[in-house]
Image (cartoon, rainbow, N blue to C red; front, side, top):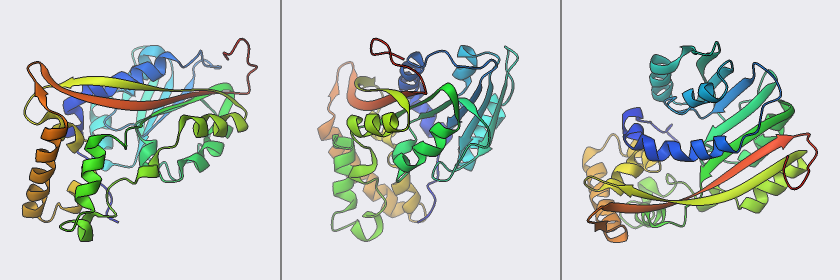
Length: 277
């Protein structure tokens, strides 16, 4: 399968909405065990949220990892270097399917990445093993594969016109697990796990804003598969756009995109008191 081509500019068109879950996740991360802390941001994208880690831990040594050259180029150009608090921020190529930390970390965090990693539960053992005692593994993933924007994409891609090119391209239904599966997996690895879901009501503006949103994320594999056939790409987008318009009608104040996300914060080797680490 061709590697998905990512477009940092398209992704950042909804940067404010996309950054909010990372902020909410970060708010639940407790104090880290070492100063300065060692932090990895797995699936850092263009680095726009990675930099907020330096605001929380100004002296931290932070590395953002991603497997997209386009995203890494943008992140490196705009954000790499010394941080105002005396820390460092750099970006490196890595694939979450195989990445194993080569040093002890105080925080491994991942924002909207693991849904793209088949078998990601099997990676948790290596990642939590690399945490210092009291260190944290935290992530959030979109948890809305039952939402119209994904259901309609799958139906269209697997329909008679497109299935020979796209049936195996769209993200499958089982790419994100239930909250209970994540809690159980992390607890068995010796962590105190806090797992929850939040549904955001994003109010989007502009022409066909839901299509514009999904062009930056979930639709990327389809756009990559059809990149060498602009006529087919435009035909798919037109049909998908029409379906999205029905599923997400515009209101006078904008178009509402309900978006459910799943969060987990797992603290390693700590006693649990009063339900909290």
